[in-house]
Length: 152
Image (cartoon, rainbow, N blue to C red; front, side, top):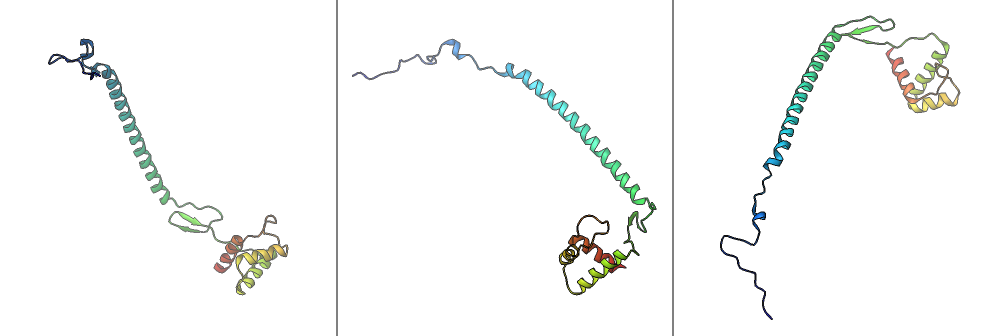
């Protein structure tokens, strides 16, 4: 059997035709794409600069607003004490008998080391209505009332 031997070509030539030897010139094809991309980058850069300017103006305006707000001291009916622009609502004292009854129950049970949850369950179990007459007693409500009673 004869061994296959590749045809030999003269030096400096290869088996490709002249048509295949032309350069792969993609620079002309990419030039419009590169120009479009440069234009896109330019527009994106301008938009980003506008956005940064807007954000800076917003931050400056908010800073001025907060500075002016902290200088305001407004009297609002129902709010008593005033602390550097902020006002704190004090716990209202009530002469209502129902409020006094609930206060006694809460203070007495806390003195016996009852938890706020246990006090709320006691008030619910004994059908003692909330101050608004609707809803249920919650540990958080009892805690808030107890802290208010201590401040009196």
